[in-house]
Image 1 (cartoon, rainbow, N blue to C red):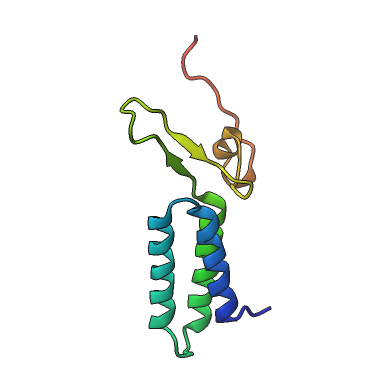
Image 2 (cartoon, rainbow, N blue to C red):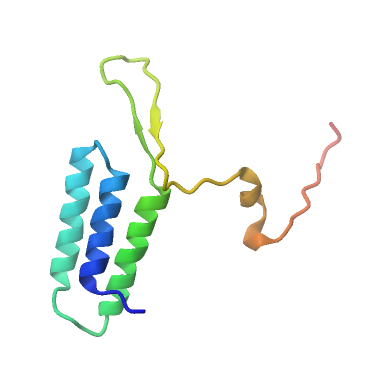
Length: 112
């Protein structure tokens, strides 16, 4: 199934809205960059499918892997609050330890 450039652009705009909600500076900057990149490659060429795929992958990363932290600027010792939304990819540390889905046996090197 081939995705149109307009569809990829819309996916990217939706992903920026989700990733940068309530951070208008980053939202506008991300959207301006997306617009600039699409305007650079406005004419259809040999590498158009590659650019469309890049836009879709970027939207996927923005939607599933970007978490923003916010803290009260008025308080110097304020804690950071993470804005984790429903689309954020959540995993456990055990999945990081097992490369490419294989079970890895971790042995302690020293006696505790």
